[in-house]
Image (cartoon, rainbow, N blue to C red; front, top):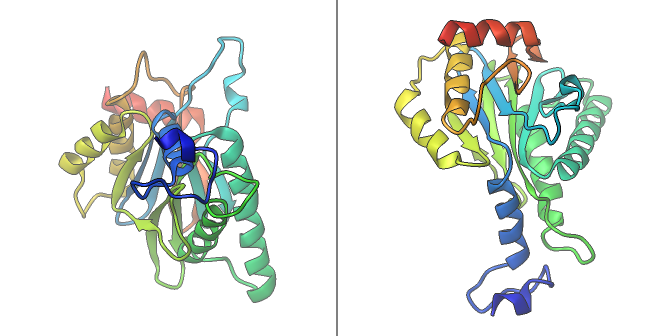
Length: 238
């Protein structure tokens, strides 16, 4: 029955579902695992990097993107869709800076990104984005870190603030691990270790500095860890 409604984005099935959004969420569930953890003094984003060929240059694959000085983003799902949202998020951050002369807050960016994602769930000629996003940032006005999630079913003004969460393949295993591991007094270094251990819950093969990516955000801003820094963290937990 649902097949009759799968080609129309804006038509509800008799069970009250938008089938295209369900397809988008399935793309997220099949995506590479990603993790976000909010610490007392920052936020950590981590993601597995999967390669379709041994000939690919690992350094050319980038999944964690810096959006502005104080905000970074990672995804699970379809890579091309993610790059569209990264470009849109950077435009929003630049527009805010030009208008107000200050960096955009994480919440403001999430609201604007969720609005773009919602538009693609109700317009003709397009489809929902097949990605879920974890957005990490530091709010200089509140002087604290934030972690948010946006997914294909996001509507304007709605988003998910998290202490810690996991997306993508086997995300439930990651969430279960985080529920046992997380505590409110976690500091940034410990959060990096926890993020790596969470990725290991669904990781296949040997984890190295070349097949995972980690980004951190604190009062100084957002940055990606170098392979050597990741290697040191991996050595510390082995």
